[in-house]
Length: 219
Image (cartoon, rainbow, N blue to C red; front, side):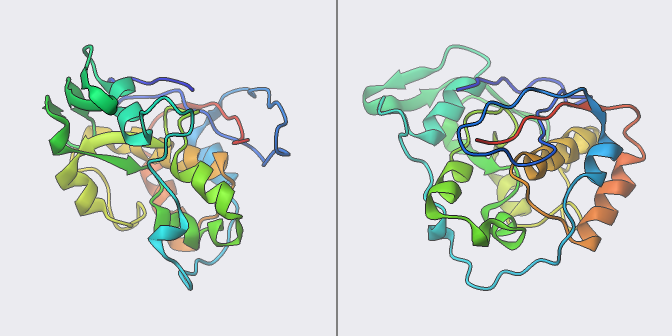
């Protein structure tokens, strides 16, 4: 599991895949790409929400059997101080920076764990064809620091299942990091983008300078 700490929102080094790798294959990181080049590598396809149910993505599981489910693992990894953890891995205090809105939070009750690409958007973009096991792996992806992020509940609920054509973080300085992490997640899992989403990503990327990305496929 890769731990992560949310820091400054300017230029981030992300892990993105060029193409899906066979299950169990080792993927060597490739040379960094510009954000614009990474956007170009997202597969293009129309989106469809037909048949979507949130329950199709089993999430907040305890994959390693340590009594800490996915939500707790993210809270522990992202706390800027040593978090307070009670019995059965209940995280009760720490310090988290919600980079969507620039707010620091010291109690986890004010936080949601956001799927960078929401479950419904993932379904629309290709996950509808996945096995239940792969959807569970997606919904609990702790192996990269970009798939799941602790943010204020109000920003996560404002975002809902919107893509960047319909929602961006309220903190303008977060936009480039946000779309880079969005693109990183789409490429890591080989999810597609429709024309409207791609156009929005490209427009924002024009103001992001030489932000670089690095990619690695999901298992």
